[in-house]
Length: 102
Image 1 (cartoon, one colour):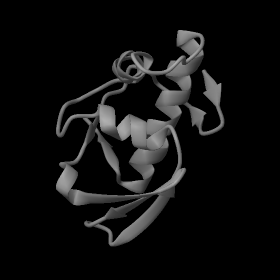
Image 2 (cartoon, rainbow, N blue to C red):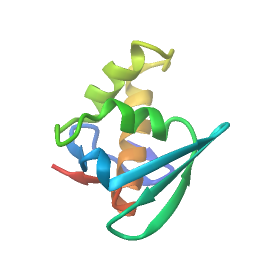
Image 3 (cartoon, rainbow, N blue to C red):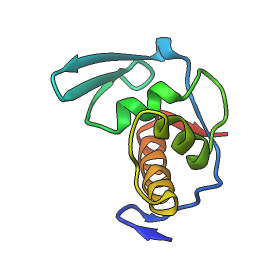
Image 4 (cartoon, rainbow, N blue to C red):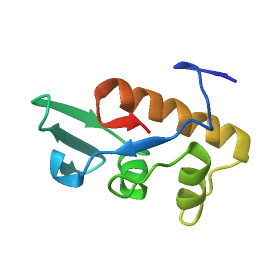
């Protein structure tokens, strides 16, 4: 499936590093994420904070797993399209070092 970030794999698994490696600061609709390992601060908006909140420390998750978590609180639309978007976000977060492939 082709999306804005290129070809995505909804079955690929990712892990979030322990929460103490990223310090969040929410400013209205914007969240700043200070990544201790790189010393960089990333500005993100929804759905990134919600994705990271669904990812328990060290637990490997797929886009489908995250879809199931987010769908409890949000209307995500058609599952295939939502999973593709989530997978694209995960790829982008991996490129920033905020999550890593499992």
